[in-house]
Length: 196
Image 1 (cartoon, rainbow, N blue to C red):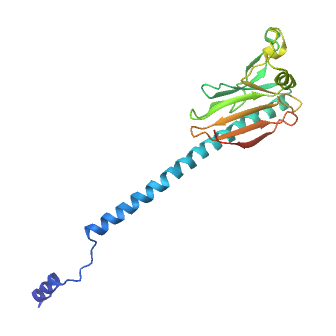
Image 2 (cartoon, one colour):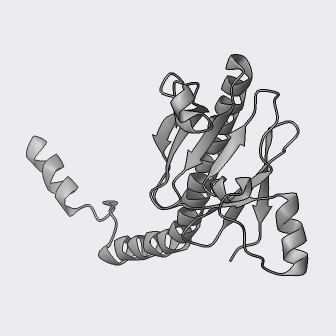
């Protein structure tokens, strides 16, 4: 009886399986779906990278501002636009270095590096610049305070104010975010800019 059952099972035409054509159709559909989804995910990743970098800079600005107020000493956020490195510096208390800034190594998280895929630009606003923009370019005397102010640094003062500045972040796809520093409150606001 056992031999008869096995012979019947071998001849049964109701075996369920996928044909080669069905498997190929499924693979093609998966490929088409992946081709549609991957470019969208790439944009999402680039956007997340840009926003992550902006949050990191906001955190560092807040750290510099709060440390300047707590120790009653001006601090600068120094940004290297080429390498993406940043560091917080404090005004030197030594008479020999009076007026200069030195590295504030005592501030935890005061040094770091931003992602190299993000381009950084710093724009400093001042009353001199708006007047100069209306009148055209004018030479700045070498000994003036404006000539000594660094274009890659933002100063936070002990009274809770800061330099009026804007940090523009741009990713490889041309998406941009601006971080505007309020000179009165030293708070940073994120503004989405048009794509380049």
